[in-house]
Length: 156
Image (tube, rainbow, N blue to C red; front, side, top):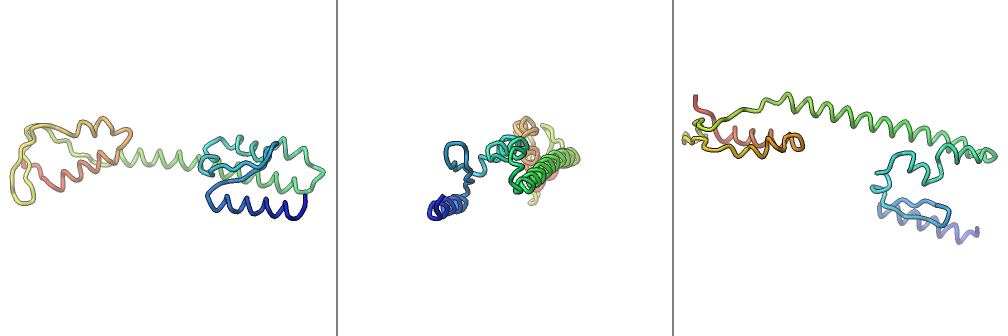
């Protein structure tokens, strides 16, 4: 390749990166893809797409660059697996946190008093939708009841 062509490729790669895109070479040409989309695939797919899977790297042992390519692949595998492990651990801790949050149980007929001393009687429970969505939006359920508690206190 001529110097001008190499510089053109460099400029394209850097310009696309500035736009949040990843550029890689496949069999046909250079491909540009949104980084956020590219990383949604499994690690094996990403490494395959950029020709950095083990099988491809090990076919180029006559080029000393293969050692660093292989090392980089192993680093990527480590961090990819570590990231997934932390996501799972975080999800577990988040679930445990939500389970530990005391959510008051109000019932129809409870008389509540607001901060100004006005009494209201609960005539219906509109929070059923929050209970229904609790698996998907546990904090929303918590925040709903927290807001309710801040507005009203149950009169004993």
